Image (tube, rainbow, N blue to C red; front, side, top):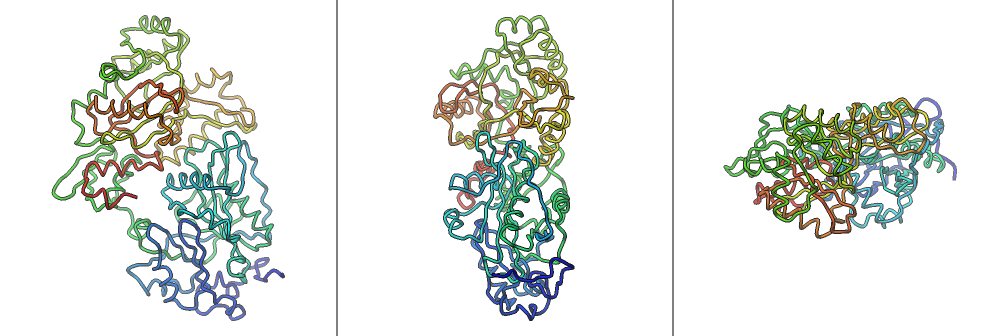
Length: 583
């Protein structure tokens, strides 16, 4: 079968290419070949090839036939403004840009793996991992049964980025072969739904997926690969342009559904909220609850419905009493309450001075020193075993709070468990910040790069500080910040697994032992907290052993995807909205 001629080796002949001629009648030389009304199910929605529709009304009707909870996309439409005019209350032109890569000229080298491999999607377990990533990125997940559908449709390719150590899926991309779909006379292909796990510690995963898909389509004989990117996604656009993509005059039409809402009505409020407040506010908007941003910088907002108003600071609400909050605010008080209830807590002591801190170290050999009050891991030093380290940690903690706590260090996974209305809603293992060596960059440079990625993935909430604690952790591992980390070597650069200091999270809600669930619910009841985040140390998620080290009265509800943390909070605050909005 000969490859179609499309002028892509020279200057683009826009008037002769069905994918680029966005006005008037289709190119006369290929008009009959385009009259096919081609549609591809991509799992998260349908890709509708606008150039294959002779009638703008039929194209508009196809978009209006979108299934609930899906996100259909019509690309390559001729006269898109006319299509939108057929249903102006239901359709809009997406504020995205289309970029094209000339595969006949492209010479893309595979990105060095550094512990990551690219492979096709293999089973329904992979689909679950992909959907976890999509939900963490506020993207539409693949529908039930889509894996079997995709396996029977060769025009669809789904590639995964997978960690060689452990096999975790950390990135994904979907490709559509236009020629296999409708014998595209332009001989094209396109890239969709590129996503990388926000908890990923590996650099270049997105770039590796783009290159792998482009090379796959090039090997299949395709002439170009297109993609759609939001006009303000500067970081992605820089990557695509670096790889050789260039902008083309192609427009995207979507429906005015709830998923696309911010694209056609703009931001809901001018004030910028942090990610922990925004996740709750977004869910409130979806339910028709009135939102009043009181102080964006502090995360304060009011929610109103049916004549009732609830004041909130992120996940802390009016439903938490001042007395209950004070039980969580002081770590020593928290421990006493939980201990009296028979829950397991590590030995703890208020340290009056440096000498008591050293004596506590002598008793326990490995200890934690932290301020009695505080949050976000500030002033906390973990796994101290040296006298000089203890002296420095005591001085640090006492600078944040006049009361300093010493605690026996407990080995195991750091698990954050969210309890809302006496129900465990989410649980996640929290991993301390780490970097992976590439054999080229210094540890200092790797930390800076990983910190930038974590900040981008969390709207600036997660960064790795280059402070004395980071330097201590690096030195304890036998390195210095100036050293080049060997290729593939994983290095933890913090001891605490706090998200605010670069930590990452892995959902384990379905893997919790029943005793851990029981202990978390009991702890919430003992402290009289309608919503609380417990920090457990757990040797093995499948076993009943645990130690509770903290209770957080204002836990972050973000980064617990796919668990419905914000949804369950709104269920509790406004139960009349619960049934209609469970997803």
